[in-house]
Amino acid sequence: MKLIEVEIGKYKCFQKTQKVEIDKKITAIVGMNESGKTTFLSALGKTNYFDENDKDFKFDTTQDYPRTELIDFEANSTDKGHIISCTYEIDVDLLKKINSDLEVDVFSVDKFTVNYNYRGNDTVSGVIANDRKFIEYLSSKYQLSDTTKTLLSTSKSIGDAIKLVKAEGDVDFDKFQQQLKKYAFNPDGLNDLGHYIYSIYLEKAMPKFWYFDDYYPLSGKIDIQHMKDNSANTEQDKTAKALFELARIRPDDILSSTSEHYERFIALLEASANKITKEIFNNPS
Image (cartoon, rainbow, N blue to C red; front, side, top):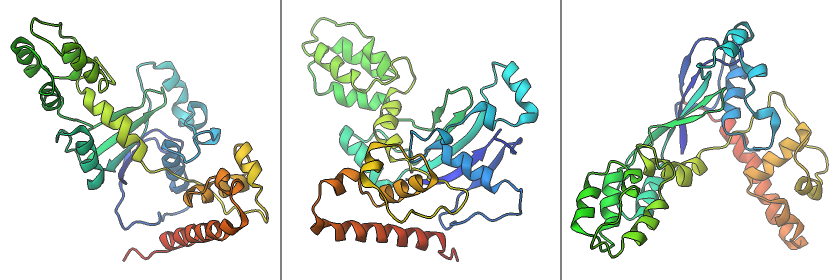
């Protein structure tokens, strides 16, 4: 999954909404001093930071809302306070997996947007699945009455289908509803299957971000036990943790291994470092 567009609203020095398309060849953002490069990247980092426990990378109204408008914003409870919207392109293989798992082609969306707000009511848009087609497919697996099948054919959402009352001849009605409820993440919504797909597949596939505003060298020694037992507190700790996550190495993997496996861990860390260098200095042309 790739980030393809960012729309930033009210965030620190940004007071007017600006939209930035993220081309696949972009590896760096260039601009004059005080033009907002750091602010833009820090906002992006807070949307899905690699360490969800890092309090420094959570949106905060007091710290992040433009100071010149803060008083008016806090007095206006109807203003959600749009911070940033991120649009992602869904990988073709992920689309195939979703439809394969659901056993019927009900999802064909190739991009969606996540909107972040100061009020804490972040929203997702564009994740639309074909509830009606999925209901029809699922109902074909059960012995249901003609009356129920007719009502199901007019149901606009899984929520509507769940509200149906058992009719005469519905041998498998209870089993059918129990199965249907597994996909009703939002029973009162208009597109329950879309919510299910986002929660189970898309949210987990969204890229994580790692942000730093200076060069923090790794310490000469990294205490693996300390990394396992404690959250990253210093910038050096955060850098080490991010590098290990990029290499897909867990502290437990090292602690439970023997010396003969260390060379593999070193190779993975070196590969990660080389990957970072290659991506940062890659020539877009």
